[in-house]
Every structure is written in structure tokens, then in C-alpha cells.
Amino acid sequence: MTGRVVIAIVLSALILCGCKPGIRGPLPICAGKGSVGESLLALESQSEKVVSLKATGSCRLEYYVEDKRKPEKEALNPVRLWMNPPSEMSLHGDVAFDPRGVVLGANTDEFWLAIKPKISSYWRARWSDGNNVQRLILNPKIVLEAVGIVAIRSDVDGRGDWSLSNEGPFDILTRRDDAGAMTKRIYVCSCDYLVRKIEYFDEFGQVAVVAELEDYEDVVEGFKVPKYIKVVKRGLGGRDDSVRIKLKSVKPMSFNQRQLEALFQARPGRYKHVYEIVDGEWVEQPQ
Image (cartoon, rainbow, N blue to C red; front, side):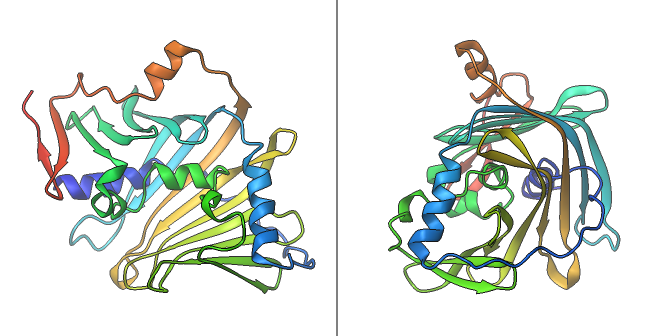
């Protein structure tokens, strides 16, 4: 299995868990916001109430490997997630009784992925690597957005590249790049103004990744977290990779300096193979 395939698989695995919540009735329909600026400011107001947190739960992954006809199915249980907004996160998944069998992390400058039990490999890249990182699609930024830190800060004045429409129970915010191509679409319930779905588009204008968010619960007053998150990466011929995360416990947490360094700094020392991006490709680094 190539390094790129492993990365795509495990980045998917680290985001989703658990069983789908029970079937619910249709969402109520309320009057939506009157303008792009009003909608963005409402989301911005919520993101300002985000607090640092610790969560526990479980994960279930389904993914295709090369030419296999049926998806592989794996579970990470338990999963522990720490977030220190706006950019720091760390997720540890238990594999074969190793509580750090899989690790996904990020800070302001970089992100990393580590797998210990079988291949003892560590991938590390800077966000400034641009498309070479973003093409992985399932990355820590999606996790941060799913838990409530939607990337809208640069456009809260209502200008920029956002547009607003309304469909049934949703206000729909659509963002376009400088060439006019859609890059992201956010579905917000018009009644409680909580995000229920985020679509991410590829360079061809097609939906590449969909994140669905349900079962919101208060962490602190004014800040709710979805306890069920499903992320689907679209594949050819319906061969979609999916990950489900079911959070069982979500609590606010204050991090001391030691915890900040332990959780939100890259630490490749315990792995046999370390990879970094060189000229757009993952290249193993000498130890």
C-alpha cells in the first residue's frame, strides 16, 4: 500500500465514529437571514464562543483499497480528541490496545499523521504546502470545522466571495474562488442556526467531501458540539470512503503548558519511517 493511500485512509479513519443516531423528523422551517453579512455574522458570533475541550468516543471507517470490490471496515475504540481553538487539535485512536496506535494532530503551522502498530510511520507537512496538503481532503481542518470552527473569519463583513440562498429548512452559504468556482457550501438550519452539512468542492467543481453534523449538545452556554459526525469522501463509481465519529463525552478543558506541548507539537521520534513533502511528493527522511 502506498504512503498516499495510507494517508487518505487514515485521515478518513480519524474523523468519524459510532452508530448513526435514530431517525428524526424533518427539521422545522423558519425565516432565514436577510443577507450574506447577517448570516456570516451569526456564525461568527457562535465561533467566538468556542472553548477548548476534551472528548471521547468511538470511530468506524469504511474505505476502498486499490482494486478491491468491497470496502474494508475498521474501528478505532476508544478515540480521544483534544481541541484548543482556533487551530490546535489532537486525536488519538486505539489500535490493537495501543492508545496511540493512530495519531492525527495540527497546530497553526503544520499537521501530522502517525501509525504505530504495523508500519511505524509518521507523515508531517506544513499548511503552507498548499494544494499538496489540501488534496488529502480529509484533514484536521475539516475536524475543526465539524466541531464548530467554520472558516468564515475573513468574510464577516458580507463582502468577499460568499453568497446566500434559502431552501426548505436551510440557509445555504456558498463560497467561490477568484475564478468563480464553488469551493465550499454550508447548510445552516434557519431556526437554531447550527450547521448541519458542509460540502467541499474539488478543482473541477464537483463535491469531493461531505460532512454531516447531528446531535448537538451544549459544552458551555452558547457553544454546542455535534456528537455525531459523518464525513464521506466521494470516489469513482460510487466507491466512497466514509468515517463516522460518535462522541460520548464532551467537556471544556483548560490546557497547561506541558499539555500544550505534549498534544499540539509534532513528535516523530518514536517512528521508524518519517515522511515530509518534497517537490509535491511524500519523501522518507533520513533518521
